[in-house]
Image (cartoon, rainbow, N blue to C red; front, side, top):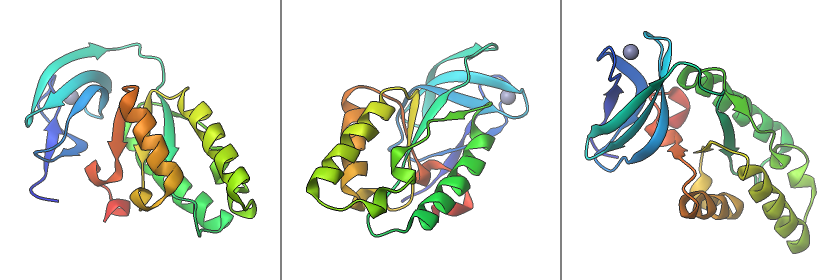
Length: 170
Ligand SMILES: [Zn+2]
């Protein structure tokens, strides 16, 4: 993954919990500083903050978690999801998690039609998101890949578990 650093808060210059690599690019990303107790909207590229704006009364961000479901039990899916939500609460101020249809009963449905239907429902939920977070081995999951392409094409801010300074990313 290469060398990693932490993004520093543009207000107080202290480290936030968001890591970056040379390849990291964030557009209008809501950066939470736990020292300032403030959310700062940042645009980040080429190892630096290009633009930022502090927003004191920001609407709570709506977060869509894209997580692999193929070959996993409902119990495993819920557990990974809960873990991700716990860590994301450190990165965002009062985040609202969009309840994913995939977290509940997806693995009990089989067949192409059910999978396409779940993909459609997932994209419908993704449309409500301020940020899409991709966790675990999402690159190996077909629906996650569709979600990734939709989020990227329609400029929904993306966040990857690889970018977090968190134990569940290792
Ligand atoms: Zn700060």
